[in-house]
Image (cartoon, rainbow, N blue to C red; front, top):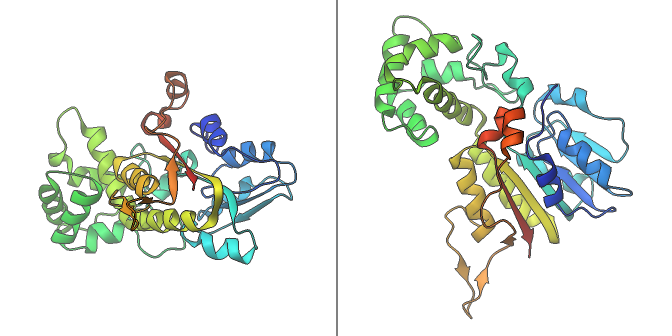
Length: 297
């Protein structure tokens, strides 16, 4: 299977779908969420985005669906092009698809030795290989501290510098070998997952794209419409939580002249929803998933 959608029922129910509404699946992937949305629509329509061209092969033959091969940071432009503004709901699942993880040449998996690539969109020029071999030690340290939340970011950066002086670090396993002295005993897998997460965020500018997507959502969703986001690590979840709460990424609620809060959304979920033990047993990727839902005021 290309990708088993995480928190499928909870996220689609969270959209509170109207049969004739216009909806957006910002991360089409294997099409699981889109398929569930289409089942609830009659005369409505669905516009989906995915920057990975491999996802296009999963498009069902359904005239109600338009699938656009672009990053969701360009959502506003395309929705205006298709005269689909305002929309009644937007859903985004921010996880890496199982399909991407299972392709060794993409570099997403820790189980396979593959090229240090990590591009969600293979047309992009920047790869993890370039970052690891060409970024300065101080820039590497900043990435690992900010995006991996490593306390030993400097040690990791210096270990990589030491390894690359002996020859280019080209593959997943070569990077793991270069940083093996930085991984805590017994927590190696967790360490490498965060290391590759940090590189993936830098390669794809994931947090920058997420911020643009959230800001556009506030502009594009009709009053009473829903924003549904599934995130997988604390950096993403913090941005989503703060934006749904306050309309900004710091989480500070602004007030008008009379002291009333100025916010675009009201949070439907006070705390994030998580997967059941049954779903986690069936699909381990669901373990770290956090679902938040907000309604446009």
